[in-house]
Image (cartoon, rainbow, N blue to C red):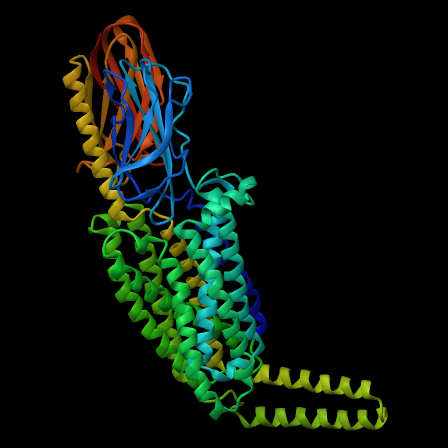
Length: 639
């Protein structure tokens, strides 16, 4: 039976690794956790005279470097001067050169949000009148490319290493103290430490390039590394490395002096190791809490300790589960039912802790029920909740197998006992004959000793595998571990995704800014055109409204903005928008225009040329999925 399960185990592991890779690959660039909520001048507006400065307002405080905020003229030349400064609160400004000529200017920004994630974007405004511009605003991304993928992979490995190391050590101390002398368990915990240490070093090296240039060549730039060490995230990573040195000492004691003590002597040492290990584990968990979601937003004084407890509960459950799986499949010494029962109790407590802390974190990051379905963070959170529910269901099956286990891993029938005695007798006879033949040959004696050890190991393995209840437990624990791998991948992607509360606030601010900009444009130029067109692509969640703002709606160059909203007025993140202009009376067109995506639900194009006055048909094609799209149109008088 064991031989038939081994290929299935390998296939399952490969499938789980593939699923993990797809999740991480699909994460893409890190979402903006600090969103642009306002600007002066506003995006898409036309001002009469050149402003003295450009100011941007974000949803939270951000970190800026010398080149974080740039202003480019129509030819792509920088017209900003000096360093960006914090004007007030979350508003940042940069000064402009005096005497700027008329035309369309591009504002680009690349900053780091307070929760450590890079944020980039761009928009345009015009002085006097819009003009052609050579600057593209469609490729302003941060945290992507090879460096972004490596950074995401490093985050996943660091979470996995933390869970395996902390959960494995807790499993030994709290559930199976005999496991401190089991090679397979030792290798598991040490592997967790090595993975976490290597991933932390990788993240430290990648950090500078990840938040700035995105170039692989800058990974070993010492200047960037020096800048990283002065940031909150750099301090957290360095603190993690120092705590890992203490963790190495803890592991050495756990699998060294602790393992050699007698059972009675272990009791006092167990208490000391538990206290010391808890302190180190909490410190490591705090290195995430102090630099990520919990460190910014609402109630940070509560959120950071809750995040630490949440991470420790995850490690105790999933890391202990991994160690139990290793003990069931790889350990020469069969694990007792009492140890498995103790872990079942520990896992149950961890799940209760996860539910409690998870509810608080969900409320803090989402803020409303609608954010579950209208934001990417909420959708990923629903997936995570489903995986946790599935994991709990499989764990319940494991508890049933545990209840049916025998108290010790011994053969339960007389025939198996007689078989083992027969094997022992045969081995002793072989040793006796071998010893007589070898005489003083120490090499032969060593060979016989190894043979006996191999036979003993094989016999114990047969004993372990012969128990059908133990075999059932192994399969259910393997399934739990498989779900845990995917769950950890989803959690990693969640930490790189903009919280739902922030995303909805940013959409509301962008919609308000767009409406204000539209009203201002209409007041300043009565020739400006605004068209609202409802659409329905026919697919799931395919209804909305598209608004086209054309300014100044005259013959020649025009500035066009397209806003796509849901029926409730929230910004609608669609994958593609296309616009065409047709003057049917003169058989001109359709003239296609593909606007650039500015932000969620907002698209823009500069220098839209309309060669003749007349009643133009403006058609907008909206695509909401790979196969669902529709075209709506309205007529407007131009010129």
